[in-house]
Image 1 (cartoon, rainbow, N blue to C red):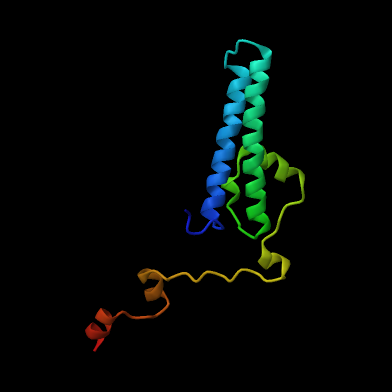
Image 2 (spheres, helix red, strand yellow; image 1 turned 135 degrees about the vertical axis):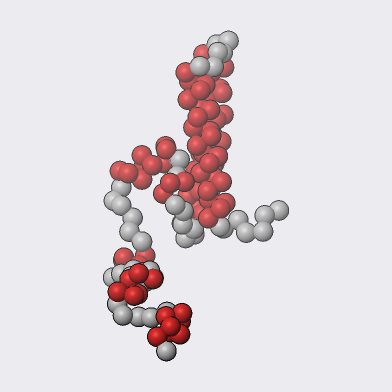
Length: 125
């Protein structure tokens, strides 16, 4: 039993499973040898139904508000997302901007700015 099924890691696992099923479908279409066309169609239908269940679960998690990194999306879902308008982060929708990151000055920049380190204070005194 999973502790939390509504996490970004569960969604990432679903996306990996969808990508795996996509690769299996392509393999069955291109390389797998079957006795008849009906066997091939039955295999493809079975994989397609598994994929549909996984896509439905992933869509349910995203509607619940679980976010994921765009890099973890399967290639087949990237095409679907690419046709729609790009989704902006919630902060951009609210009109907020991201805070600027503070950078630390290096010791040479600090000396150039006139600041002294503890060691130099002792030498000066």
